[in-house]
Image: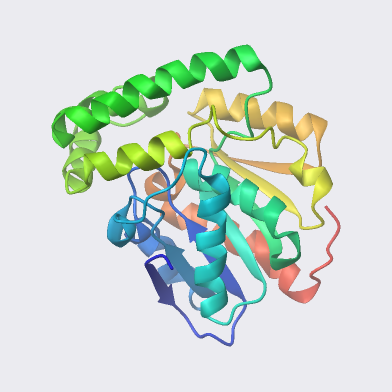
Amino acid sequence: MLSYRSQGQPNKPAIVLLHGFLGDKQDWSAITAVLAEQYYCISIDLPGHGDSFNQLLPTPGFETCCELIQQTVSKLGIKQYHLVGYSLGGRIALHLARRYPSCVLSLILESCHPGLQSEQDKAQRKINDAQWADKLAHLDITAFLTLWYQQAVFTDLSITEQQTMIKRRSGNNGAKLSNCYQATSLAQQADLWDTPAVISAPCFFIAGVDDKKFLSLATRWQQQYPLKLYPVNASGHNIHSAAPDTFSQLILRLLNPLAVNPTLPK
């Protein structure tokens, strides 16, 4: 069972929230403070993160991770839930929705990749991720984080914002994170592009307009499958951090019609 934080009344519709790599359940605090008025919010610490840092995964680890999440949710007496996932959490959410489709009422993805589609891309990604995992296992955590937040996907963050994130994440255990990073590498992930067409739950994608990579990816995805894209202005890769009020209200707008009609067409 994974560590979690619950907010709201258990008799209300449930929302399960999965954070990104390096994050923890507290990352959703500003969002769940709003959602908890209408929903029972369960923010989960993924393996290797937060208070679940001692939970290790095999490689590949998506199936085990999904089983741990479902076990945690089931022990809370939750049979069905809306699922929200950011970045790594979104990739895990895709696997979770495929593994337990009858449990997922809706799937809301934030800045996540549905999977590489060529073996060449997977091979290259495996090499890149192995290099990052090695840095994570051997560098001081602050040195690793400094390198991590220099990646192009985080260019929307100011120097001050980067320093704030580094300070916030510096309590992480590098070796534990390295295990999760390799186990849930994009190179290990299944091709899940067709998920919106395979599951019955409506699927939504939230992307920051300043995150050109994932906005472009989501646009292509929407053109191929029944996925609804919602771009958010003045936001990059992490919308729920950059624009928590906008993000929270968008979630409510997406889910409230579903509370009245769970079979709302895509």
